[in-house]
Image (cartoon, rainbow, N blue to C red; front, side):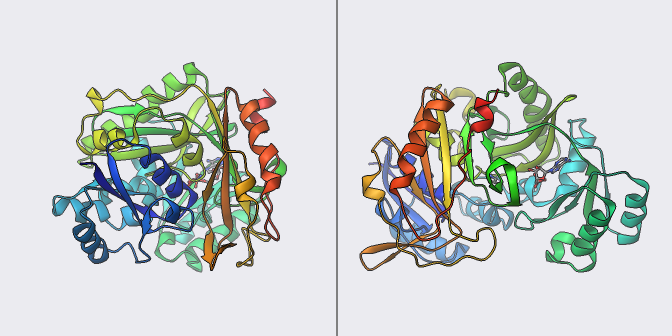
Length: 422
Ligand code: AMP
Ligand code: GLY
């Protein structure tokens, strides 16, 4: 008998997880909370909040063997602790380890204590002291809310006025609530950004493939930040030499540090790094797969996904061979007009059935309305192509996108272009 797996989340990242799990020989049924219209084609979805009571009921009724969490919020709220206390299998870090994403002050202090490379910084819980410090510093300078702020809590301030305004927004106005009780003010780093992912079981660290995200809404990295407009893998500037450095100077030391602090780290560790002239430095950690990075990483994973999840949960990474295809992947996000600002929903999506079968289409903000599929979010679809090279994957994915249509659809035309200009 195969295993029943529950996926928590509702984005294109979670659609990719479900798609990958469906290819596992060891998987019987897949369920999702809450899922989306794309996930519903592969898994039974339950439109309930991912709260422990609802989940326990579902696990019991559907005989679920293992749960995997997509987004960070349930991890910070301690979903893993709740499951483990009941002897239930779940993939992800406990609350005290999820702090690596949940608190920038915690993370910066940990990095400093263990001499892991990151931008020079100070943290403040007193706004006047923070202002004094800003006065003495030059620009550009980076101001960060301590806690989660939906991607809006970090500002790279080009001038002092912006830096002071950001500080006020975070600490005085509490625009992000308690996430702004403390701030980190740090040196602005220059270089190429890369997203590095590793599987961790508390002791062993196994690298996944790296990727590059495209956070700005418009081509040429213009316009406001978004949840991510696309990603590709592998980034050519992330050389084998750099990879070795990142593993020995950053990923392995952090996992060791967390164990030493009594907060063993299990799950996917996602390091956002700046490749500076002084070497790779940590911008931040996330305690989960990235979105849209997951949409290129999971299709490149060669090893059975269930095997990978179980190796982490059962702490057997040291004896489980895990491999990735040496191919390239490109993901382009199709977004609603106005995103990341205000946008409309309910526009009919057409053309999905005309897309070539070698292209993957993962849903994010979509919904069924009778027999039609309509838009239901800012990021609507993730379109993914693979190839022997990034150039080939780019060619394939952009050739098929024009077949898909919805009113106001927009997307970046330059996903992966940075890989070609090298
Ligand atoms: P974070 O949420 O901390 O990763 O920050 C969001 C984005 O802000 C990053 O992806 C970077 O583009 C930028 N950023 C954060 N910290 C720095 C820094 N110290 N220097 C330059 N850019 C930064
Ligand atoms: N791609 C950015 C994130 O998942 O946080």
